[in-house]
Image 1 (cartoon, rainbow over the protein chains, first blue to last red):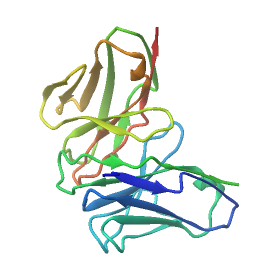
Image 2 (image 1 turned 90 degrees about the vertical axis):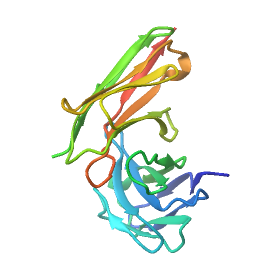
Image 3 (image 1 turned 180 degrees about the vertical axis):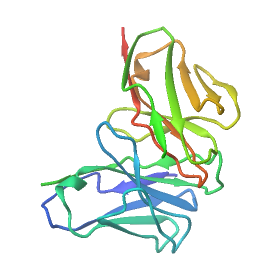
Image 4 (image 1 turned 135 degrees about the horizontal axis):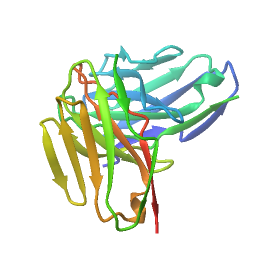
Length: 114
Length: 109
């Protein structure tokens, strides 16, 4: 049982390049989330999904797209990377039962955009 | 608006007790989480409070007062491995977590 995994762990991009971050969970969780974490700030929600085939915008969705074609995977895409997208990206998942529904996090992807 | 306020940094001594405070304002409320995050790692779950009062779990306890929009995390018998950031995260009416910036706790021998 690997929990939540993320690939890649590190990446350096040049401005304008594109990339996809992959999140996978093996806990049969319904809900999945993408956050970014910047120094001195709380985790900010980018996009989330409440089930296979669904996605929704979070607090900071601009410049990102997501897809959830399979229940266990949640992809985050950057179509044209900008230096402002330099951050640590965390994926999380939950059962989707509300209330005391604990979020389980992946190890993070450290992205630098030059 | 939604707002979380917790101290940026605290220092404590190994073996001592420390209390990390969090005040919050959210649109609706469905409980409050505390997470621990070691440097360079992912957040991990510590506690969840939805009713007023104290929840004790080993060396860690968490308190909630819904009327005051206030919570604290109490860490007893501090160990060096407790050096980490502690994130306060209330859940709003849409069951979304609103994350504070975290309190960096430094433990000194």
